[in-house]
Image 1 (cartoon, rainbow, N blue to C red):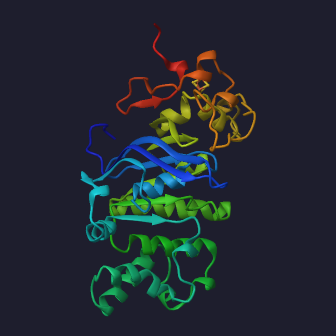
Image 2: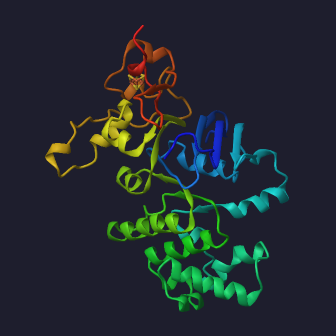
Image 3: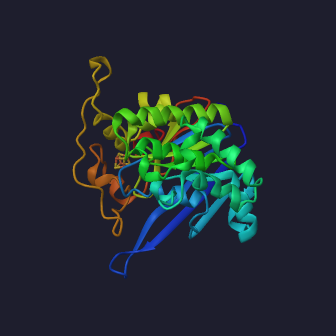
Amino acid sequence: MSGDTAPLLEVNGLVKRFLARDGKGVVTAVNGVSLAVRPGETLGIVGESGCGKSTLGRLMLRLMEPDAGEVRFAGQDLLSLTPSALRRRRRDMQLIFQDPYASLDPRCNVGDSIAEPLAIHRVGDGGARSRRVAELLTLVGLEPDAAARYPHEFSGGQRQRIGIARAIALEPKLIVADEPVSALDVSIQAQVLNLLVDLRARLGLSYVFISHDLAVVEHVSDRVAVMYLGRIVEVAEKRRLYDKPAHPYTSALFSAIPEPDAARRRQRTILSGDVPNPEAPPSGCAFHPRCPRVMPRCVTEPPPTYTVGNGATPHRVDCFLHAPAA
Ligand code: SF4
């Protein structure tokens, strides 16, 4: 995909802080993130639990207010929209949750749950909505008569299909999918991922696909951003990132994936220590206490962003190892 296509979604310098659990300190969950998603693209965001990726997903949809930064959707500044203009804009941007129960009311039948966004946005009358629900259920691989049943009557994979039907009901342009398959059995994960890939092609969707699982992100993404302690530390076209990771953190994440093919097997890097306490992030490069290639300057200076390689899609990395030779 060409790097000069106008972005559908663009975030610049996003910052989100929360009060620490003790009520005194501050946790910077998202720390100066700038990213863009082009029309028809899937941008994967990968990182360990607690790195801020779910918060970033919600900021992208303005389901949360950032403390600083900018969110633009189709060129429009989302943060300046009035509540009613934002509600109208929401038709174009939807969220798929890890747990579809979060969006499905257990007391409502499936048809009513899927039709709810249509009713909120006053799309069609009762008959038209019922027809649309039947169409959506078919689109996600369920029988239309599922509309009369209740969420508890379905398996986890089927419930996620229902969650997806609800998310696409208003024909959005962008879906943020937050760990959409991590609660499912591995055998079911591939089916739901294939459904998302198929819907993207059929409906011209763009996705931000958030996951801790590199294999899952690889399956669906065009580009992948790697997040560590609230920052994007590396972003590149998927094939390039998986073949030539430039950040030691990305390399360590990849080396932990079991690889049956000996030719592709990477030397294993064991990350020492846990993710640092976000209430007291390390100085300099936040990864330095765990980095196998740490240098003296990494302890005191935060690395800037460098561009590596010369592909059509920029490969960016925040690491001094890629500083141009002086
Ligand atoms: Fe490691 Fe230094 Fe690069 Fe950070 S800047 S990832 S500590 S080498």
